[in-house]
Image (tube, rainbow, N blue to C red; front, side, top):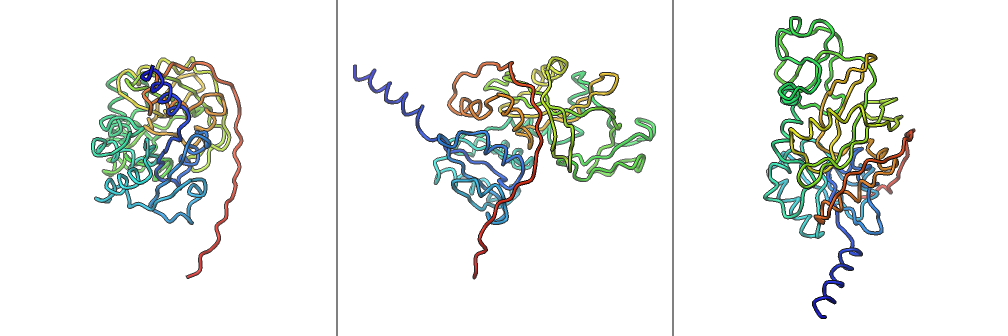
Length: 325
């Protein structure tokens, strides 16, 4: 009888207790999306960033904020662990690509759960040349990419991207500029067509939980301002091929072009939450609940149904009082 009562008490505690989530790079756009995923009656959000809270929008929506060093700093992991211990953090959701890679590399040194894919996966995804090699070796359609003899391998219709670039940073779109590509760049055949982002979520063993494609109707500086969810049937073959050949954990997103001839080209994999993934939540996918279930080791079942909706994004402001010395 006492055992049964204790089990009931424990179950109720797990249902009603507040979960403490740490979101890194709280000043970045995907961090705002991450905050919006959770029921704030059941979740405490702790934010970190290397900039002061009063220069960030995201810190305004946090229950607690901590200034931390850059992810490349030798004390970064130590500082993150300090925050996790002090705030009793249940899980870390890394936002910025560099943080995702470093935190996944030192996963075993973290004192809480990390919602990010394995380090081997992240390394491949964060390097566009390694991503291209992964696509090619697994017969996943992707634009021709090279590091030298650009005119021979690609021709004049070429775009140059930073191997480890984020968003549109560093893109050179002026036709044939380099025959042999600078070491920090790749050369890629330029694809024209409709761009899509596919929000995906993978469970404990890398299994696909959902895949929600969204058309990028209007994009500014790499961020989608107008978009709409679409049916996923035509994309699932390539999504499943990627998921089955590389292990993921938690939220990821794929960048895809669909040409007028209905050819698909997978451009890149982002092993993290997307800045506009809020569309997927609005379409009926409870992404926050998926993360919570992952944290609690609860069963995650595939989610196949979602609404077809359109998003129009607008700017909004927050204000802080200026502190006088």
